[in-house]
Length: 476
Image (cartoon, rainbow, N blue to C red):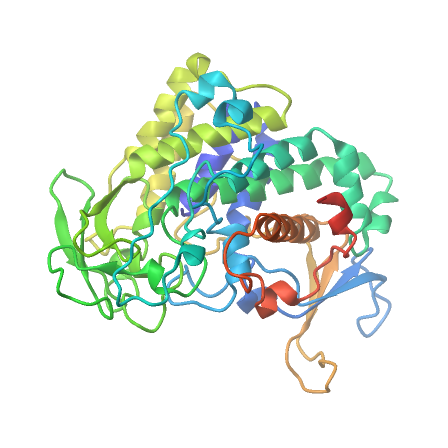
């Protein structure tokens, strides 16, 4: 998904489903959208968490905690050609979901109630039957395919609702975080806990929404994320292949996505990277598009898999409405919100011709979300984000007070700089919430033996975030 849904769609769902205020829904939407902008390029370094923005001299702030190499949530550019941090991609963008439900997994009805569950499809498992020539693909890797309504997805929803309705749990998470005690000693403790909860809710809404948009792709650099040519079964999977898509008409348009194409049709279908939906480029992120292709986790002779994004995004919006309602202590009743749900679907389906390089699909879709909100009517977010920019400065969470580019690493070599981050800021609360999300997914997948043993063995996963090892006591 892109900013049109992660910001405007999420904001609208928070208003419709959770009845959150304009300010609260804006915080949720900003946190959801910021997942794609807390990047290693901009934020890797040494974070010094400070009590206030004043300094005495020579960068002498009142430092209450230090976090070396924070838990950034995006690596590289749009999952096209990036590899390395499978733990990051599993935690925030490609939630593992292709496996049978463990014993005692709640049903969709248990999670959302009958009214919502009747409108959502059940969890479906993809059968992994690769061509014999593709040695990288196995059943263990197959479990990592992102599938909506998986047991882990439902566990995230349950945990989020628990956190948002139990400030003691939020307080416990903060208490075991770097600088957490100082946070909780703040006279505005209740406001901090509330804002932390909204930010965690935004992060989780991003992950849940992506289970619909990113389904059938996974978080590892593996041939499972490649596809066969849709019409020539004798081609191998080492270079650009044909796929088909629909945008403004019902005509299927055949195309080879390429790193040399303009942005709308850009992808990396080659043998240098098999990460996420890099081979499919931006198509999974366009709400109005349908596309079909032959995934390599299935045989060459299998029929093409058709992805109907307007339908999948409708489910994503509905599930977010339910999540937000429960997080705010109620149950979502879709039959009472037909007009608002119809408006959301209009925004989701509004077509853009992606072959025209002058079109920016996320920008046009964002405009449509704003138009439909105005018709309902629901007031727009406090900050109107320009989605052509990545990022617009209004999407960036506040909290960075200063930056020293000349800091030295422990070995004396100039490498990354030092960031001075306000303790009470949304940026630092986001960092703690992101670390909690990582620990939750890491703990759950290991407890249920999902995926290869080295899924969380990358350098990103092994680094120390703001939350201490005591998190294991909370996640038991």
